[in-house]
Image (cartoon, rainbow, N blue to C red; front, side, top):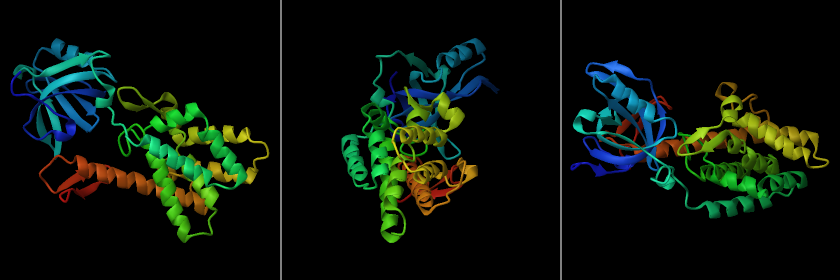
Length: 326
């Protein structure tokens, strides 16, 4: 239909009439409003996410048909009009205006248009190798090589995102985040050399290995059943413990310290850590992880801000963020 233009989510502005291809992250139940029935769902492409609202009429059968067609992981072509609600862009879909949803089949879309992918994965893998090879303590060196020399695991680790929505939520994001945490830890070690450098670096490189099993990538980034039930800290601890069990003579105290770093890297029990940091190396990994995740998230929010206002309200930080100076 004339008047609708193809736009990515990051390009959308209030009042735009757009048509695009997106993946569906989730749907909310159908509700009744003044003129009929509607439902809300979340769309994503490789530039960001946006809430969409399907404003159906009184024909509940037609609204239900549209709702049932867009299950989790569906890929859809959507035509709608960009609006603003509580300082956030939304995509309003009004069938009475000729707008709507079309579900696409596999082969009718390019997955790279839906999920962002880092272009520097080979370089990041080389940097991880350099950091791993700098560990001289023999047991920790053997452990790192046992983990990252596994070609199948390394392929999955290099493709895995670091989060679903909050930070480095892209293919290669986990590799990028892990190296950032390692670099932050090494900067801290330069100032506090009383810490065990090899333990600190090994803990940084291993802290998020559980995300390989906890996350899955289809047309979206989501959690696996194991990720939902156990969480990546417990999965990562169990994975590393199994690898340590394959190394003859690995010292028990060193094993406990490595596993402690993994289990405590969220820092607090109410943030998901079964235990809280009890050694300097664990505390450093926690703060490096938290710093990198929050800084990356804030930079993403500033980049994706689609408003003329200089400030946006952020539900994660629960405060206003300044986005005017971009």
